Every structure is written in structure tokens, then in C-alpha cells.
Image (cartoon, rainbow, N blue to C red):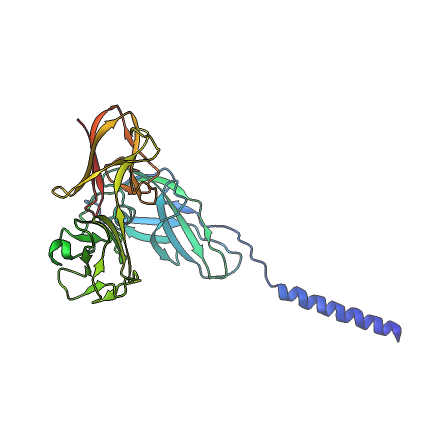
Length: 346
């Protein structure tokens, strides 16, 4: 009887062990990531307006997650060296090919990524594969290539900024801010000549759709009360129409850098705003070196020039080179939608 009891215990233990093993379930084994097959590494692709309608096909091999599943593939593009921190999505599909046109790719480069037309840029492309939210995405190895977009005329969405500083005229097209990515987020710089200037935002050159801030809490209210700025000066305005929020930051501009009299130390070399030209300018002696523009003697708002193309890039890693010593006049244009600068030796 004792022997029979002992065998029963073994049988029960075996059954429990089998149940535990069964509860573990299948183990995910990724057999292969997707691989981009076109475009190929090292390609030099020049996009032109004349060939805008031509096909631009992107192809890759299928991913293998180790089990049967429907896979969604997404093609991402970003600047080389950016580690896909801010990629533009070219498209998604369940197949292993994405059929685009040159115009599609040019829009991604010229508008979304803000590249300069007719100027070669180093970019990277990769494919992201996803089966569901419970399984981590897998990526193809990035493929590096050169691409040259062509220039197109862009009509950026804009918000009017009527106020006491311009006779409350929503049709004044010189006092507007822009959405560079057409995503409901607007930015621009507006100069208020007087303290405590009042203003509002309107959608278009009329008062039909307008926002103020009832309560002064940074939240936009349809038809709300006027927004009141602080001291006179140039304000950086940011508006998110989706979230109905805004900010208005007073900016006092200067240049800093190894080419300036104080080098990279404080204080900056202060610039002056000219209401006639609507430019911030300064004339000073520089040595060979580098400069950047920044607001309020601080790095929270600063601009360099990543492409050495005369366009200002926010918080850019690249400084602006000054080739030789001399007396220079430096101008900064924040009228938007693209901010620019000039440096002229006198």
C-alpha cells in the first residue's frame, strides 16, 4: 500500500510539473530582421521637379519573428548621425515594398526635415517591423545615402496676431506666426514697441475665429479676453491649436562665441532691433573663430547654422564660422517662416 501511495505522489508531481511547463508558453525567437534592398547603401539620389512624378520604390526583405503573424512595416528617414531621434515616416504597409514618387520623398526632405533645395545631404533610411503592442518592434540596419531635394514653394499655415501694436488688424500679413510642419503648432517672433501690449490670435484675416486667454493661465479660449504682454520687446510666440495652449517669451538677442570680444563667456554682445527693417543688428570687431545667436544671455533659446546656408537652426550643434578678423555688421531676421542671418565685413 505504501508503494502504491508513493507512486501516486510521483504521478501527481509529474502532472504538476507538466502544467507548469505548459504555462510558460512559446518562447519568442526572432529569426531575422528586415533588410533594405533598395535604395542601396552609398546611393546618390538627386530629386528634380522634372521627375517629381517618377516612381521611387523602397523594398526590403520580410522580417521573421519566429511565429506566424501579420507584420506592419514602416519606412523611416532621418539625417545621418541623428540616430533616428526625429525620423520622418515615409509610409507603412503590410508588404515588403513601399511605392512612392520622387515628390513624396522631396516633401519629406524639403518640408518636414527642412533641408535646402539643390543641396546634397547625408541621410539614413530604415524599416521598422511590428506585429502587435505586446512584441517589441525590430528594425533593419540603417542604410546611409546622399539625397538632394529640389526647391518648392511652400505656403505654410499661419495664425494672425492682431493687437494694439498694429491697430487690431487681423488682415495685416506682416504680424503672423507659422506652422512649418502643418501640424497645428505655430511659432514666430513679434516685436511689441510698447509695454503691456495686448493681442489675440485669429484663424485667417478676420475675427470670425479668434482666441484670447480668459484668466491669463496660458490656455486659449475661443473669443476670450485679450492677452497682455509684459515689457516692450521681441516676443517668441508658440501656439498649439490642438491643445489650445500658448507661450510668449520676451527675448533680448545677442551674439556669443570665440570670435567675439568676450569669447564664450558672459555677457553676450547685445544686438539692437530696428523697427524700420525689422532686423536685429550689431556692428563689432571679431577675430577668426565662431559665433552663435542666443536670447537673454542663456542657452535656452539659441541658433546656429547646421548647413552653413544662412538659415538659422534652433539649438544647432554647428556654430557659425568667422574666417578672418575684422569689423563686421551682423543681422538677424526673425520675420519667419524661415529665420536667416547675414554677416558682412565692413
